[in-house]
Amino acid sequence: MYKKLASHTLIYGLSPYIPRILGLFILPIITKDLTDFDYGVYGIILAYITAIEVLKDLGLNLILYNSFTKMPHQYKWMWRSIYGFLTIWNLVYAILAIGLIYIAVPAEARDNVWLIAVLNVLPIVFFGPTAVLGKIFFQMKEMPVQIAVRTIIFGILTILLNLYTISYLKLGYMGWFWTTCIVGFITNLSFWYPINIKYNLRPILNFKRRLLKKSLKVSLPTVPHYYSNYIIQSSDKVILNVLNIGPGDIGGYNFAGMFGGYFSQLGNALGQAARPLFNLYYKEENYIKIREIIYAMQLFFFTITFLVAIWLKEIFIILVNNKTLAATYPMAIILIMAINYRPMYFGAIGVIIYNEKTKSLLKITFIGSLLSVILNFIFIPIIGIWAAVFSTYISMMYLGYSGYYLKEFNRVNVKFYPVLWLLATIGLTFCAFFIVEFDVMYKFIISIFLIIIVFFVLRKIKRLKISKIFLKKGIK
Image (cartoon, rainbow, N blue to C red; front, side, top):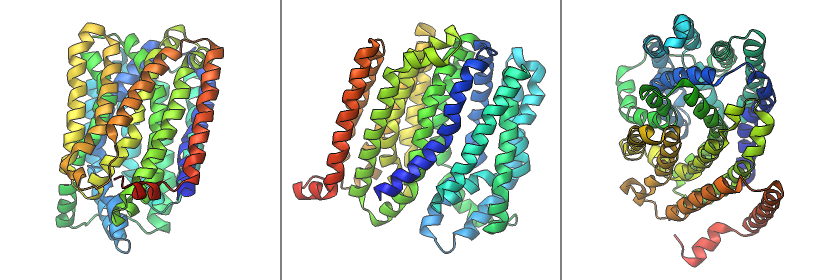
């Protein structure tokens, strides 16, 4: 089990990181041709676009995942119906996206407003949800290589196109939009043949309305749930813009947030690898096994985020050829450590989603996102950009741990001890924020010491059968 989880996580995790690591090497090149203004304009537009991105699938991904597990011999019919519905719906979504982009583009970028709009919706208009279905299909079939190969190839293509459009053509922020459109188009094209021809998942445009109505009744409550991720991670840029914080300051915050995004991608990789396994254990109600996996994931996350965070000052000095952007490493530390909410988040959310108690998700995600907005509006006028950093951290902690206290989770007769993990996360964040300023030799000693401890703990875990220990001691 752990070997499969580790190998699939490695495939899902490394595949986007291979191009991203290569992308770090071009940072010294492209940051010479970009300003904090470019990052600000791009960050603002991206935040508005992301604002409605959750409407693209209306939460029907949940039905795709669950029907694959619960209807192993009949899921294709359900998938084809959803494919057909979303193909039509995505045309409506494209019109909504164009309208929002037209309103949202800052005055400094008005000359490019229609080009930005077209570049953002072109892959959607031509292919609809093809890439989304393809990724979920290969994920649930436990064929991660199919996703990984595409991720690596198109990730490298993204780097090369960014380098070409930004540093050779000198397009500034427009280089990102051209790259996103081209790569999005080709990505969808790569999934079209296997989904439509090889695996016979062609869309049924004459779908049964009653079936879709029933599915939407379950899926629509998840839209605010997924929307909360946007509110917490992206809406702060919109609020900063509304409160007249300059594009340069927003650009610095957006740049720091990119490094938190790298670890968010790692969290997504863990989720992709664990989702099929979790669904099987949910079906068996084997929550002790789920807890073992969650704990292992959490320890892994603690180790890698902490090590990177304490060395972030040196990493920025080496990779960032822009003094203004290089000075944002303290913000990046907190945003990286905030992503530690992710493994424990899986433990609570997974139970609720599998049992399709989707309305309960609002108690976690709506309150978490509302908390982010309120904190931003109160504190941004007082402490500026740092308010967005702290509100993101606090809201993510709420997302990660509040689900364990819902009545929908009380039916699980296994304790996950969320308070202890929350305190550990906060403690490590404080330590990383101060250790980053230590002398290099001290940080080297701390890093080696931490690696030795983690190696020792992992060996202990490997030797001992954790679930049996829990059962013998009566710990639930």
